[in-house]
Amino acid sequence: CLPMVRARGQRLASIQLKGWIKQVIEAACDDVQKSTTSIGLRTSGTVRLPTERERWSVLRSPFVHKGAIDQYARLTYNRLIEIYGEGTQSHDATKTVHFLRYLEHTILPAHAGARAKVTLFSNEVRAAAPSSSSGSAATSHSSSSGQS
Figure 1 (tube, rainbow, N blue to C red):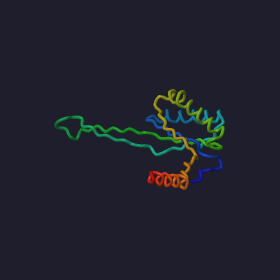
Figure 2 (figure 1 turned 180 degrees about the horizontal axis):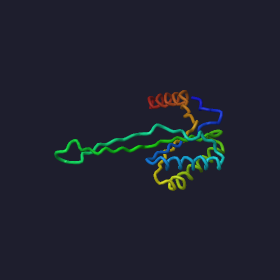
Figure 3 (figure 1 turned 90 degrees about the vertical axis):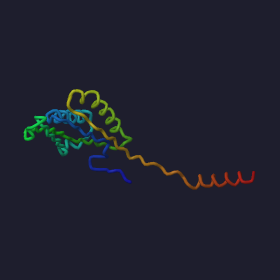
């Protein structure tokens, strides 16, 4: 499993912004872009993800007029911004964590209709336990208990 390395560096985090008002989401994305460039982080730019549409039909009358229906729709706008850097153990990773704290405490409260889902990426790999040393210890322990 090799980490994905691109010309702009390794992907450190992705921020998915959602909201019901398009202008609020666009303003939040602009603020994220400006803040990351002022800190010195590289981003992918704003990627527009598909808009989710929810639709409801409600009867106006509870009794006779079944043809009288009100129809409502709610659009959820989605945007994605990815942050790139040199690696997960570099100075860019520290900048990313500080930026995410700034995003949580400053940018999102300023844009009341926006919410964010943040994913941090790491290239750590779990090391397998050495099977030869643990296996020999278990066999010697069982043979000594059998003699007692």
